[in-house]
Length: 399
Ligand code: ACO
Image (cartoon, rainbow, N blue to C red; front, side):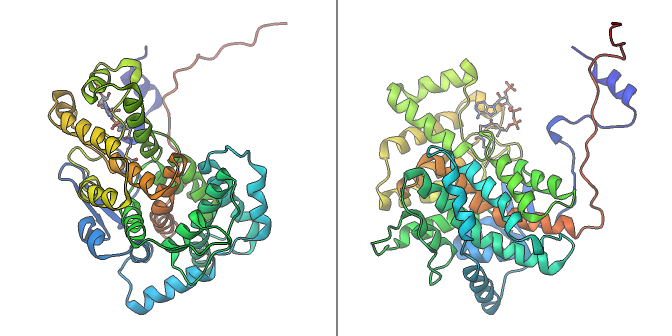
C-alpha cells in the first residue's frame, strides 16, 4: 500500500534491497559461488575435489587459515583440538536446566553463548592469541555440546570425550556411546558424516554467516557471534530445511498420497506448502553439493540400511520436479538438504539433530568469516537503513 520510489525520495540516497538480494555487504576471499553455473569453491578448491580427497578437519584448517595444511600443521591442529574437548563441569550443569523435550538447537546456541562466561580472559577480538584460543576451543567444544544436547534429549548419560579420537569420531562416540560399552566406530558412518560436514563447511554470505558477521561487527566476541549464527540457522528456510524435508517425506508416506499429488499441492501453493529441499537464493542451477550427495546417498543408505521407501519418494519428487514447468521456470533444483536428512536418519540421529549437524559443519565457515571481518580494515558496524512507512508526526491526545 505504499510507493517505494516516493519513500526512497523522502529518505535520501539509500538502496532499497529487501533480503539483500543485490547487496554485497563485504569483500571476502573465502568461498566462491557461481549460482548459475553451479560452482562452489573453498579458497579456490572445487567442492568436488575436496569432497573426494580431503577431510573435515583439513577443510576447516583451509577455511580458517587460508591454505591447505602441511601434514605437520594438520596434526598440530588436530592435537590442539583434542586437547580442548572437555567442557567445564559447571557448563555441563546447564544441560539439566532445559526441559527434557527441548530442541537441541537452542540448547546449542545457549551453551555456545555461555562459553563467553567461562573464558572471560580471552575474548578480545583484536588480540590474535585470544582469537586463536577461542577458535580452537569452539572447534573442540561445539561438537561435544551438540552430542550432549542429543544425550540430554534422549535421557542418556553424557560421556567424557575420548581424545584418542579425532573430532568426527569423538562426536559419534559421544552421541551414540554408552558408559559401560565399548563404542565401535563404523567406518561407513565416519566417512559419510565427514563428507556431509565438508559440504556444509561454508557458503559465503548466507543468513547465519551474515548474522555472525553482523553481530561480530559490533566487536562482540567469537562465541557470542557464533551463538547468534546458530539461532539464524535454526529457521526452517535455512538450516531447518533438512529436518523439514524428512517431515515432508514422512507426511507423504503417512497420508498414502502419491508424490505427484503432493506436487500439485505445492504448485497450487495450497496452505503455502513448498517442496522442502528445493530452491536456493543463489543456485539457480543444480546445487553442486546436492549432486555429490545424490551420488553417494544410495551407496551410503545401502550400507546403513536406510528407509528405502522414503528415498524412493524423494527420488520420485525430484524426478517429477525436474521435468515440471513450475520448477523449471522458477529455476528450482534440489539443494544440499534434499538428501542429507535421509542419511542422518540412517546414521541413527533423530530429526531434531539434523540442523545441529549442519551447525557442526558450518562452524569453520563462521569462524573463518568472523576472523576475516575482524582483520578487514573496511569493516564497519553493520547498520542497515530503512524506508519509514509509519504514521507522520502526531500529537499526544490532550488530557
Ligand atoms: N517449492 C515450491 N515453490 C518454491 C520453492 C519451493 N521449495 N522455493 C521457491 N518457490 C517459488 C516461490 O513460491 C516463488 O514463486 P512465485 O514467483 O510464483 O511467487 C518463486 O519460487 C521464488 O521464490 P522465493 O521465495 O522468492 O525465492 P528465494 O530465493 O527468496 O528463496 C528459499 C529461497 C528460501 C531457499 C526457497 O527456495 C525455499 O523456501 N525453499 C524451501 C526451503 C529450503 O529447502 N531451504 C534450504 C535452503 S538451502 C540451505 O539453507 C542449505
